[in-house]
Figure 1: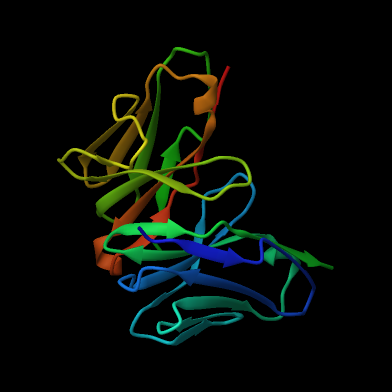
Figure 2: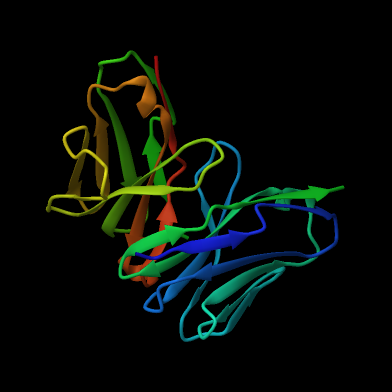
Length: 110
Length: 116
């Protein structure tokens, strides 16, 4: 099955700086790669996603890049704010099943 | 965007009892529903996948007789934890695929189950 690895497990950044989270996947048939933000005690919230026919996608301060050849994708958050502090999960989907990374705890220092 | 609700948000029960968790689509018809469980500081683990009117497909290691899933309509799925034990205490989250949104997957707010 699909195996998704996510790094780093924790990330502390100064407010205003950028945060980058990287994921790799194993199954070349995966074609959809969403990113979720999860705050304590809440369900995951979709923040951005990218499909296999696209290399990059941006939504305001958030961007995602995908390298299908290398089987890796990354989340970039610019101008971080305290409300960006949360756990972020990457995922890869083949057919209808999402496989998740282990998560990255992001802390934005004021 | 799509909205998925879950009820209850928290439940505490005694060991041996059964608990039902509801998952509803509020503004779309879900073609496929998923149930996940998440232990503290861990990632989401898929338990089962279901489509309306058909039996759920369980992941390896998930007991189908213990975790009963009913997907009676395009807007409602239920997960019943039968004969719950303390090791079943976890955060249960449903997720749905909205066909009109191009199969984007949205998650509910989760249900915290504590079995005493």
